[in-house]
Image 1 (cartoon, helix red, strand yellow):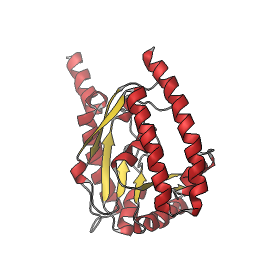
Image 2 (cartoon, rainbow, N blue to C red; image 1 turned 60 degrees about the horizontal axis):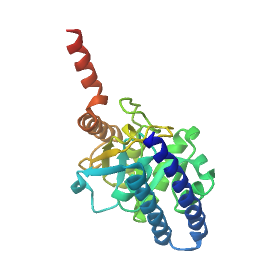
Image 3 (cartoon, one colour; image 1 turned 180 degrees about the vertical axis):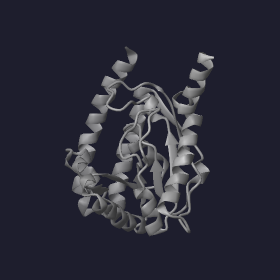
Length: 252
């Protein structure tokens, strides 16, 4: 019952702070980008405080020393809504690659548009990839990090989708480092679940991958292998290998 009550209070408080800040960021389009990101950081601090003190949801970072000094590409696992905010608390100012329809969401979508998120039409095929590369190079050159979820959508713990190569193509085109990120947020904040559970999310940052001399497929394969391996380490109960091993042991 307590997680349900916490989740109700979270929803009320999150709505109360998101609506006005989304409106403020929209009005701030006349201000420099850094000022808009400052407003976002204030909202983010409030959101993370609600997660911590209302939901009892904390996080820890492993591999913080792997964060490059220059703007890079964050190539992250995507399990819940939490990481869309949590990554902002860990890495410098960043923009996300997201589907264009999200910009139509009142307040939140308007804020996305105000800070120039990379919006794409997923049905555009190769044109969508070109949008990621063109807009991504522009944002990186301006000093912002780019967040890409290679699986394209939220995927439940223990499940996996094919990694797309868009982030790697952006790395090759821009020369920016690609930073693989694994986390287990989905264990506490499931996709489309109303109830959020307390606990400690582990966010693990891997060694940055230099695109020099590598193809997009090679970069994606390196990042995918690291993320898969790290997911088994931080979330062993959802690791396919661990599940197979346990099943075999039970059968024998």
